[in-house]
Structures are given as structure tokens and as C-alpha cells.
Image 1 (cartoon, rainbow, N blue to C red):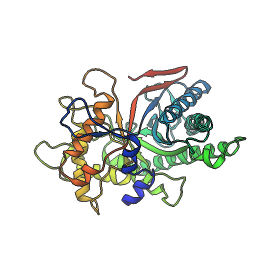
Image 2 (tube, helix red, strand yellow):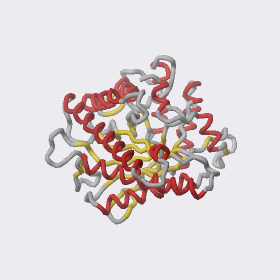
Image 3 (tube, one colour):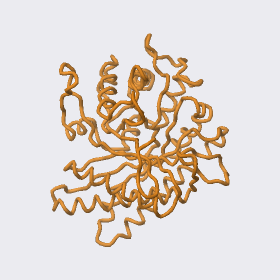
Image 4 (cartoon, one colour):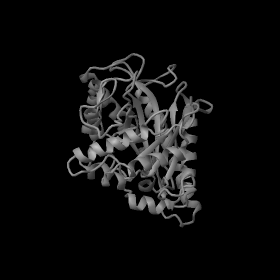
Amino acid sequence: MSSLTRFWRISLTIGSALAVAGIVGTSADPARASTPQPVTISTSYYVAGAAGADLKNVLYNDGELQAAADCDNEHPTYSDDILDFGAQLLPGSSQGETESVDDQHYYSESQIEAMAESFAEGYAVEDEACVVASKGELGIGSTAYLEIGTNNAGPTPTAAQAKTQANSWWTIDSTAAEDYYNWANAQPGLDAAGIQLDVLMSGSSDMELGSGYNHASATLPWAYQMSQEYDPGNMDSYPPDDYGSADGCYNPNGPLTGSFVCSTGWTVKDVYKLIVDTFPDPQIYLAPPNGEQPQEWAQLCVYYATTYPGGSTPFYGGTDILSEPTGGSGYLSTAASWTDIIDALQGSGNSNCQESLPAFETNFDEEATPGGNVTWP
């Protein structure tokens, strides 16, 4: 997958991102260079609770709320939104496709598709209303990049089973997108072509390296198979995202090497393969002394930039930074997570990483449940 292909999935360059967001200084350290602010701060969700009309309504309302927030930016904008449906089960499981993050419910392919479509419909309806209310000032509406998410914490698959899982997940993504487009075409009085582009979908995963998650041998085949399903010539096809962590991929004594062991057997070379096949949305919510997430991703950026042909980096203008500011002391706030990863990239010593900055911030601290959302955990 070329760097141009990876960047193409969201047509927003870092230059336009900074122009839209504006450049502001940071009050914490007046001497620090001005820090670019995220284009959009969105809220993503762990989906939990019994599947049904109540949960679909909650997700529909969440879509409306995100569209309203994007509209408040007073310009057409992008947001990166994730619905995490929990760990993917082995192929043929009688329980369904995934087990929810609360370990109490199971979701089938059709239920996941319907819930993702519900969020998309809520976003599209509210966004179209925003365009109408602007009386032509906005011109065009905003766009939500909706990631239909799972994770690699389920039962350990063989390489062949992992590829089958990836095919199933791609089917969920493509079916949800098709159903959404068909719904858009059936809406009276709306510009079908325009409303279709209000939401773009991708099958993605929270691929982690730590204890409790599957090793590279079970995770990399999934990522590779998903990358093979992606068709850069199809405007309805978008590459998979990895909104996971890079636990342990930090060497305080110098730059990373391919053989450096990060965590639970994962090497830097393994993580490099994962980045090549997916679009990384790094988790940034732990900094020293509680963790080194900003430093991990900065060092990985340098390794990638010096290893990948052309010296490109895994970070582009469409990259999203995930923060999880709740859960107790030691967690970074949204603003701190953003500033820390920018500082780490700018202090990396690699010009490509210094210039290749993210554009989006996602708060991943909500649980979507029937009847309303609750703060996670």
C-alpha cells in the first residue's frame, strides 16, 4: 500500500488541516512552539448492552450529536468516529460475530451492520439539516469517517481463521455502507449523492500488543487480509484502521531496531508490518511516569520513516489520536494527549516525523448502552 494510497482515504492535507484548525500557543509552556489544534474532537464508543431498538436509537442520537458538533465548527469538516463492538469470535461461533466489551452480550453480523447504519443515518440527517440552516453559507456538509471496530482480544485464531475473520469483518463494513447508501437514495427531498458522502465507513480494529491480546502470528494475518480487500480505485472502499497501542515499543537508550521486543513477543518489525497494512490511529493517554505512549509512537515513526520506501511516515493529515481521559489518576487529558504526541514527533529528530502531524482527536471514553451512554469504565 503506497503512501499516496494511504493518504487518499481522507482528502485533507496537513496544510489545510492547520489552516482550518488555526495555530494557537500553549499556556503550559510559553517557550514551546505553537501547537496545531485538532480539526475535530469527536467521541467514539464502546458498544455494549443488548442489541435492539433502544441501542440503535442511542447510536442514531450519537450520530446526530457528532454532526451537530461538526456543524458548530462553522465550516465543512471531517470527524473520525469509532464504534467498537468488542472482540471478534472464531469463525462459525454459535454465539455470533463479536462479544461486547462488557463481556455480557454477543452481536451477529446483521446486528453490527444495523447499528453502524443507525449512527450513519443520524449523522447524515443532522448534517443535512445543518447545511439547510446555514442558508448556503456552508455550501457543503461535514463528513464522518466511521470505523466499524473490533479487537484482537478474542479467542486465538489460526492464521487461516484470522483471514476468514477479516473477510467477515470486511463484509460487515461493505454491507453496512451499501445499506446506508441505499437508505440515502430513498430519502425524499435530499441530495442523494451529497448525503452518501456524509459518512464513509471502514472495517477497523483495536489491535493491541499487551497481555490478554493475541500475538502477532494471529493478528498480522487479519490485518494483511483486510488490506487486500481494500480497493483504492473504489471510492466506497477505505483502508482498515488500527486504533490500538504500541505497548513497550520504546527504547530509552536509542533508536528502535526491527528485532527490539516491545511486549509479549511482539517485535518492532511486527508492528512495522501492522502499520504497513493498516492506517494507525495511535492511543495516547498514558505518559511518563505511567507510560510512554507518545514516545513509543514517535520512535516507531522514525523507524518507519527510515525503513519504508520513500521515507514516508505512518502519520498523515487524516491521522486520528485517541485519548481515554477517564479511568483514574495518571490518564492524560484530551489537550495533554494531543500536545504530548505533537511534542514527541517534533522532538524525534526526523524531519518527516516533525512535519507529519495528526489532525483529529477522538475521546474514547463513552459506552453506548440501551437507554443512554455512560462514561467508561
